[in-house]
Amino acid sequence: MSDNISNPVSTGGAGTVLEHRYAASWVTLLLCHGEPPFFPGGRIAEVSVQAGSLFWKTDDALVRGELPDGLLFNAAAQVKRMCAPVESDEDFAGFITGAWTDFNAASRFNRGTDRLLLVSSFQSAGLYRFRQLIEQARANTTAADWIKKLAHSEVSQQRGRGCKRRGRGHRDEVRGGSDG
Image 1 (tube, rainbow, N blue to C red):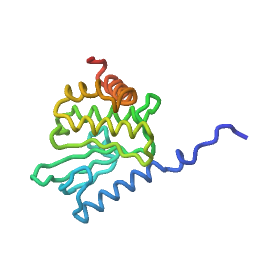
Image 2 (tube, helix red, strand yellow):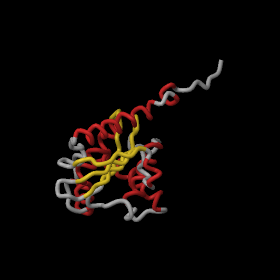
Image 3 (cartoon, rainbow, N blue to C red):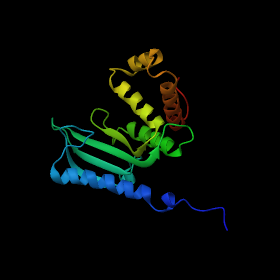
Image 4 (cartoon, rainbow, N blue to C red):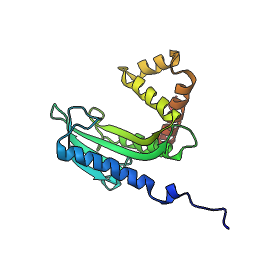
């Protein structure tokens, strides 16, 4: 008997099924004129799956639509069954790499209106801390202000800094070096 038994979750298409479910939920919002949770007041106009053919690196789905003020938006999504901001998680590293590439692609990403989404069905403790870190970042007006608060925060301390360090490390790999 072989010791190399395949994991049925890995070989059974669970990740693909999850991608399809999220895409179906976005198509449902499109058909029902519902608001996407990542753009309150917005309306979805188009949903594309496997958006790599559209040159997006965050490529499981691309949701396009219109905001209440008439501006157009893109939301590029990476859908993962499990994902966490730890060095050993290749899916998280892949998301950071793709998201950073898309974020810096002015030809397809508008920093004022667009979003990059990491969708996960299981929320690990690490991903929860990463989400807290992102929420803290959104509450600040500048990156420098956020970094200053993070350095002095009693709430985030070691775990938050670890998430930031790992995210920055993955970003720096894409850039080809660190900027401090």
